Length: 340
Image (cartoon, rainbow, N blue to C red; front, side):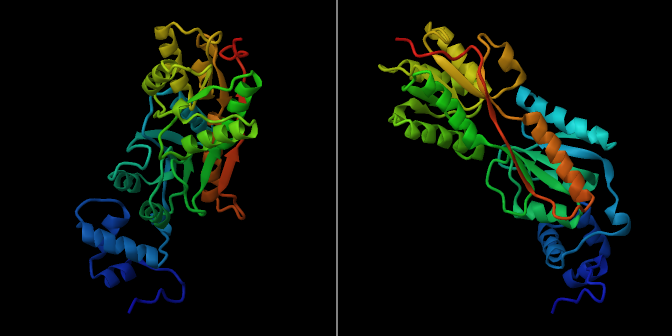
């Protein structure tokens, strides 16, 4: 029979060790992400910590004065804007920012959690990723606040999230092209398992349906948010007997790839092909021609994510855990009326 938490209502490490039939040092190793514990024992201790709602106190609540920003890619213009926003607000709070490159679009690498438990950061921001219930429990039992930024999947309702209005952005991009007279509109898609990509395509479909324009499925090509996928998708689209007069790329890197494919095939932008991207990274304004794109407030998304971590750490009451920031269309020189 599980041991009671007693009058205080708090589980203690001694209680956890007795119920798990392990030493206090073993429980401490699990709690602090240290090695030397078997997988089965670690899982049992984690389960007991969660079942008893363990929360640290005293020295166990100590944290280091830095935020940990976890990303699968750190060398893109997209990631640079996220880093800039997180760093600005962290600095205001007197915190450093450390950058951890780990995992992929789905989750951090398996060994990441052990490291973060040892490092004991003030809080964690995870970008373009999901976080398993088990990892969520481990962070919560150690009192480490976390926020997902532009998550790849749909997190549970109690998971703090900052995102952007991707569906509305897809509508804005497509409606702009329709208003210029385009009806044969190609799409360079994104990763099928990433929520933002699905939402942007859904916005495209909604705008086309609202305008009464039939969607030709052969004009929707797969992509993975890379310039290379923009090149291959655009080459396939522009080689069709009835090529599109406009292409909506689901991010700016793909749009730059569309530019490269158009140059190779001798197709001029925007005279023969209008192009719209998504994100409005710094290079979009200086592309040739300057790129029409949907602005995703990347810097502000990171700023707000840090503010949520701070509010969780400060135990603010009635804290909203979901923030979805508006997107907007930035019209530049890569789009024009359809050629007659």
